[in-house]
Image (cartoon, rainbow, N blue to C red; front, top):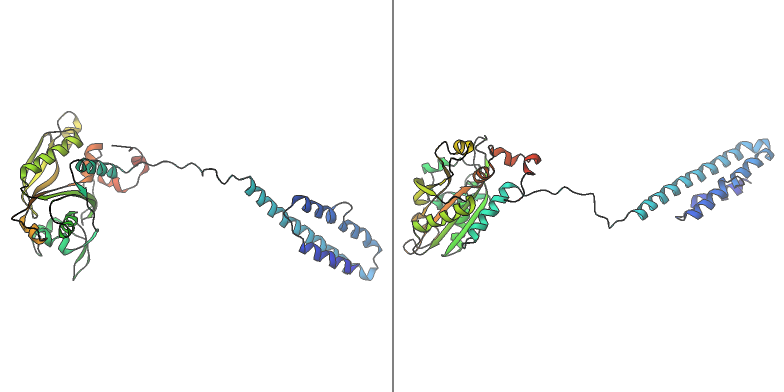
Length: 336
């Protein structure tokens, strides 16, 4: 009888099935009212006293093996049922639809406006060398105008830095292309400035460059007149003399915002005029640095901070909001 129990134990350990009917027959065979285990417990009374201990241990071992096997089969078939019932073609849990970042919205709109008059987009690296970021732009070493752009230097000798403006993209483009050139250079720039509601160490610029024969300051003004009308709906602009090392003459561009509300008084300081960008005619020294004939070609350049434009369009009072990823602020924006 002990040998019979050992054979049954091997049968239990070797049994496997994923068919629920076969598993149920296995359970009845061993654990049913007329099953093998109950039969052995009935025969226990007839076993000689000297064999009862060993016989009882064998029966308990067999019982435990049967119960363990049934638990394993139950788990396996339960998992299978879940997989069979799950429709794997169903969509996942609904995801919240986001909205485009206000900086990207406005950048896209600016690019769209200038593309309509022939400008193409040119891109470049955010980690720059001294030549493309400063020297080629008529900012040689020790030039005092470099102090206007507090810089994050990564290495020295040679100088490697985070670009302080996207003008470096224009230099790279002019080195590889001859006029006519008409490009926009949008991108992220970095300056070592204290972070406040009006300034940040990271911000976005979009700069434009047009080089061709007989380009004049009148061409520049007309281009910017068209841009301000398209973006702001404001057609009145003025240009104030200014200084930039890479343009001569240079100017700051103001748009007449008006004084129709208390907000207008606040953002224009009661004047109605609002500064939106800098511009000027490309300095001949810059053209010479990139091997473009300054006697034959002339051109203009302009540049603006995208955050400033966004703050004007959406009446936002703190530049830090663009970098905090606060969903409450970002989800307000759909399309410009």
